[in-house]
Length: 76
Image (cartoon, rainbow, N blue to C red):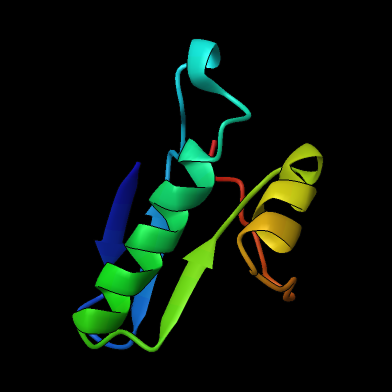
């Protein structure tokens, strides 16, 4: 997983992944919660994540994200 920062109030979670042999053990959730705490300590106010519909329960229910409106522009 990566956490990127815009230099201001926003951080972004990218590429959250756990090896399939270790899935469903809470590792991914702990990674996201740790990322959120570290972003908070760094002074960020918001942590963003983009996810596909099949990951909704993980990000919203398990990790506490809430859905928001967003835009997407295909470049290629």
